[in-house]
Structure formats: structure tokens, C-alpha cells
Amino acid sequence: MSLATNSGERGWRTPLASMLAGALIALLALALQLRVLTPRAAVVQWAWVIGLVAGVLVVGGAVTLLFWWANRRRLEWFLAWHYLLRSRGSRGTLIVGALLLVAAAVVYRGVYLNVLPPPIAGIGVEPPRYLVWVEWTAIGLGVAGWLVTLFGVLMLFFSVFTCISIFGVHLGTAALVVVISVMGGFEQDLRQKILGTRAHVVVTKPRRVFADYRWVERKVAATPGVVALSPYLEGEVMITSQSNLAGVVVRGIDPRALDRVSDLRRYLNAEGGAGSLGNLRHPERLAVIPVARRVLGEPLDAVPGARRAIHPGVLIGAELARNLRLYLGEDVNLVAPLGGMSPAGPIPRAMAFRVAGIFYSGMYEYDSKYVYTTLPAARRFLGVDDEITGLELKVDGVERASAVAAAVHAGLGPRFAVRDWRELNASLFAALKMEKAAMFIVLTFIVLVACFSIATNLIMLVLEKGREIAVLKALGASSRSLLLTFIYAGIYIGTIGMMLGVVVGLAICSYLSQVGVPIPQDLYYIARLPVRVTAPDLAMIATASVALALLATIYPALRAAALDPIEGLRRET
Image (tube, rainbow, N blue to C red):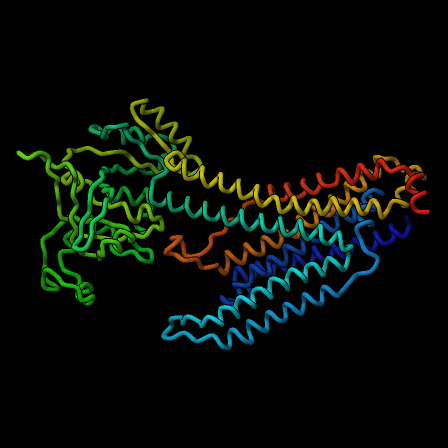
């Protein structure tokens, strides 16, 4: 026990030095991020890598220090740690992993980057097919090298079966962190787009329009938590251009009020957008035929630069503009199914509008279905008086939308329907939540398979250490003490594997968020893979990994505790 004590006294200095080094590196990363040391953007971009290294050193040092303290405090912790170690470290696996990493670097930098064709006029040239295979070969060598190197580092300290168990928990935990973070990123991106196109709270009347909405506006505006409101008039119509037609939802708005409720102005300025809300308020600005249409070589119905008749403006989505082949300043027709009566029956109502802007929100449903115009123009087109369909509200906090909606509903009474953004999109968010839960359950089976390896490792450990267990029992060790020893061994494996998995998962998520992985925007309507790491998700994943590892130790621990010392000594002789 004195040797253990002496080694323990020497062992606290290394983790403490690791934590101090991590703190200094974290300060360096912060200085780079704030551009205190250097203003160069290329260097600042690597601040997240330096910060990740600092986090690994601090957390690894803290966990090692905790293990050192536990080993000195109880004999069971020391025996559990001693049983997992190997007497002599193996460097062969580490060397193979390092060679794979060197090969990946040579293939990527020495072959791929040298043969890759340079861009022409700033536009990238598609590489030949064999270069794509070279790139994927470099990526495969890099991933294999990283995994083998990590396994080689574990082989320096632990036995082969312990390394396999730790590595399995690490892979399962890392996969959970990455997948759950990516799904959380999709959910956050979808939530931001929904909140940008629709308000936090919507007030409507079931099956009716507002005929006396002024007092409702005053009542709602006086509700605590309501920051802004905007009335709207909505109807389903057809939109026609010279080349195509589509069914859309026309929405009459007050441009000044809507600007305080939604992000429509930002979507007009986004990539793929055009025009402004000012064009909607002042349609006379678009009375001159734009010169850009003449450049496209398409036929025009007037001389470029001449003035045309003034028509009310409309804002259309980028997807709808692409389907109808519309550009800023072009004329369209909106057709309402029920416009009036004639001797032959009901006839549709048609009205000419002009494209005052093209918005890009990133939501296919809105960019292909919604058309915005002013309230007076919508009333004139739909043939209604001073009426609206509902009110859109913006509250002082997204998470308080439900509470504010309840307060508004209590003030207006049961004649009105008040729904917040969660209720308006309940089915969509419920599907995302169910998919996230299903992916968590499916990927947890990877950790579960690794836990079977933990159980196998501990069972073999019980068989291998049968003589030592028998001697300990003969010297007076209780069954409870041996039970705790093997449970602690499983906790060691689960904790180390979980920590490695979380660190690797966070590293991958940091790479995805900082560098970005482009995905086909035409298919997914998003430029690159989104990532969102949250503390509750990490805590849930870490708890599940350690809990499964703990469950895997129950049977081996019970078997070690039930070992008869006489049978153990007789078996070894």
C-alpha cells in the first residue's frame, strides 16, 4: 500500500499541470478570438481549435485528478484501476496510427491539392472523377489514422480488452453527440425561419373576419408582453404570369407594422432577394420598365425607359418567382375564384399587380406559396370592406409566447382564437421531436453493444483474477467490497469512454459549425449542415453512456462477490 501511496503522491502533479496548461491555452484562444494578439482573420479562425485543445486539457486533468483522489481514498477504487491497467505499454498501434495520418496528409496535400485544377475567373472547376476518389482516400486514411492513433494511446495504459471496451463506448457516445447536435441544428434553423416569416402569436376569429378590429388592436396592444402587432387580410387565389400560373395565398399587410413583427425586410435583402418594402408602399417607383429585363433578351410590351400604368405592388417568394419566371418590375395577375355574379353564374375577379420585391426566407412553403401586398390593395381585390383576417403579434420573448397568448385570450374572450408559434406548427415540431428521440434510441444501441464488451471484459477479469479475489476474501475482504471493486471498474471504463466520446463529438461538431459541410441547396433548401450543441443534450448522452456501462457491471460484480475463496485457490493450484 505504501507503493500505491507514493505513486499517488507523485500522480497529482501531472493532472494539475494539464489543467494549468489548459487554462493558459484558453487565454490564448480568447486573445485570438478578440483579436488582441493578431488582427489576421486566418489565425483567428483557428481560435476554436486552440480553445478545444484547452478544454480537453482542463477536463482531462480534472477527471485524472478526480481518479487520483478516489484511488487514494478507498481500496476498492485502487484495485479497480489496477485491474484495468497493463504492466507494459504497447507502442505498435500508436506508430501505425501515426503512419496512417502521415499518409493521409501526403495524399491530400501532395497529390490532391497539386493536381486540383485552379479556378477560372473566381469560379471553381469541377475536378475529374479520379481526383474525387483521391480526396475520399485521403479522408478515409485520416479517419482511420485518427481512430488507430486514439486506440494506440489507450494501449499505452490499459489492457487490450479494456481498450476495446473504452473505444466502443467512445464511438457510440461520439456518434450520439454528432447526430443529436445536427438534428438540433436543423430544428433551430427551422425555428428561426418560422419565426422570421410568421409572428410569435396570431389572433383570429374562427370562420369569420374582423369587422370591428380597432378595439381589438387597442386591447391587445395594452397586454403586458406584446411588443408590436400587425393586421393582415388573407385569401387563396391564383397568380398568373406570361409563362405559368400557380395557386398562392395572398396576404394584405401594413408594411410599416409588419416590419416590426417579421423579418420580411431582411429576406428581401438576402441572397436571391430583390426590391424593398418601400416599393410596396410606393408602386409608382416601378412604373419605369427596368433595363435589366432588356438585357435578358426577352420580349417587352413597352419601350425600355418608358413609363407604364401604375399597378399595386406585390412581394413574392424566390421559389415562386423562379417557377413563374418573374423578375422585379414585371406585371402579374391575381385571380380570385369568387368575384361577382353574371347571368351565367359566378365569375372570377382578376386584378393586375406588379412585382415590387422578391424575398428569400429559406422555407419552401413560404417562398412558393405566399404573396404580400398592401391592405388597401388586398381589400379592393378581394372585395371586402375595412376588414382583416387576424392580427400578428410580436412578444418580448420567444419562450414567453404561450403565456402572452393566454393573457391575450383571457382579455379578448372565447370568441377569438389565440395561438402561439408552437401551436401553429405543433405537428412539425412534434415530428422533429419524435425523430430526434428515435435517433437517440437507435444510436444508444451502439453504446449498448459496447457495454456487452464491458461485461465480457469484466467476466474475463474475474476469471483471470480469481486467485487474487480468493486471497482477498481469505484475508477478510467482504463480498460487498469485491462487488464495489468491479462496479468501480465499469464506472472507470464508462467514464473514460464517455469523456473521449464527448470530446471527439464536440471536435466534429466544432468542425462542422466553423468550417461547414456544404449540402445540395436545391434539395434541402439550406446551404450547409447546421449544428447546435446544447448542455441538456450533452448531459443526457453522458448520463446514458455511464448508466449503461454501470448496468453492464452488475453480473460480473455479482459473480466476483459470490466467488468461494477455497474454490478460487484450489482452481489456481
